[in-house]
Length: 402
Ligand SMILES: [Zn+2]
Image 1: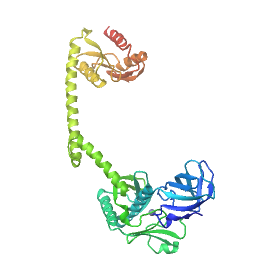
Image 2: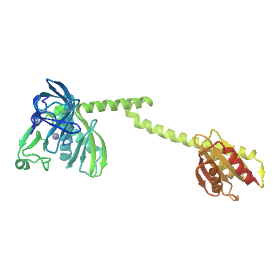
Image 3: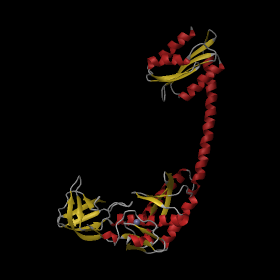
């Protein structure tokens, strides 16, 4: 069994080892007699780095643990044979990032227990942010603020973080935050002095100050509780910097300070709403004039006016407004269409007229393609072809004029 060097020293960045086995597969996995590489487990991501031998340097792209407890180092390019002496080198920046996130998670989980008695059900470490799921049915911004403050206080106090090994029996009397159901015996405990004691196999900082800081972000209700997203250390810095850039850009667009953004956006929204309403009112007014004009230039047949109009630069909304006004302002039947941005047809007749607009629409679409339909007095359709639009509308109009 591989000796797990990271169990005792999370800051060990280089170590000598011997390849004891190469496990074949779609990617062959190198097994060492001892390793400081952390394999993905317990919510924490794997380490990357290199293995240096007298044959050169290979990059360790992923590290995983198989069901038998073997730690498999997956390397890029040609592997190395068993018996090779190597020098393992961990990617230090990535390891430090993981230690900051994982140790920050311990603090945060303990803070939620201390403040509100909520257990952490699960922990997820992603490439950009981390999250914990809490056993609670509600969570408000004030509680988030309290947990953030308490966990950052512990960061600032720079408390020691010790690694201890105890038997399972001993562990039961120590008041651990969490005892894993099936963990090796002895248990490996992470002891944040007088704040949190829990069993964990991951890599952690030596003092809480090394976490740097904990920033809580999005919260969301999930099936079994609440999910809290957070970032620690350098990630908190990167994230805050990116947020600031985004806010600054947005504030530039409204020529204001970033703290005034919500107020400015509310003003813009109210403004847009007013403009939309006044645009709609004007459109209705113009449509009324337009309807009058069409009625004035149309001759009457058998007590009604039949109008045909293909609008080349007006949308469906406007065409419908004009049609509704034409049939209201006179005794009329309209055969209207719009060709842009989306081709559309509108048929309408004044109340009491004998035709059926829905049926005439079906007839028109039988030759133009597309879908549509409607009631006796109003119908709408979307034709597939518009090349013979004028001819089809004129033919229907000629029929109802008789
Ligand atoms: Zn841990």
